[in-house]
Image (cartoon, rainbow, N blue to C red; front, side):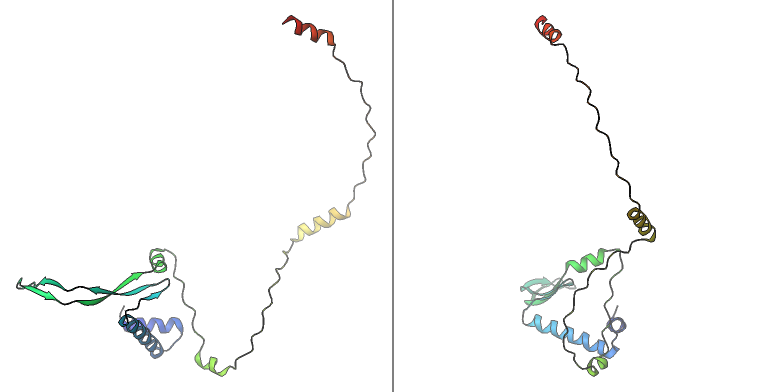
Amino acid sequence: MNRTELVGEVSELVGLTKNQAEKSLEAFEYVVKSALRRNETVRITGFGTFKVRDRAARRGRNPQTGAPVKIKASKGIGFAAGAGLKADLNSRSALKKPVPAAPAAAAKAAPAKKAVPVKKAVPAKKAVPVKKAVLVKKAVIVKKAPVVKAPAKKAPAKKAPAKKALAKKAAR
């Protein structure tokens, strides 16, 4: 993907004109470049980190002649992918598209409204299926008469002969 294709896709996704998307990309590049020139790290959470890497002076060789060459110290840029970018790269599910921005003209025309506190929504009660409601009504209407039980007669307890148990213990 080249720069023109990138600008075209960004403009379609976000709802900007190609000119606005181009200006946004230029502004992003400017901010990153100026931060890196100040030797700052640019960290975009979920995407990655741009960082300045210092290269020391060293000796190299000219590949055509093989003669030794001195290479000056310089600065390079390193990019380390963030966890979110790595996860999106290795995921099989579709990427979440960004939400298009509101048109700029509509935002300027509408006057600012005073913030109104939002009331918390009360959770709605679950609807009971019709069949269960009918069954519940029948259960409420139908009353059973209490069953009165006569007291049970107690049978006389049988007593084990104590003599036989004692005789068995003594035999052991």
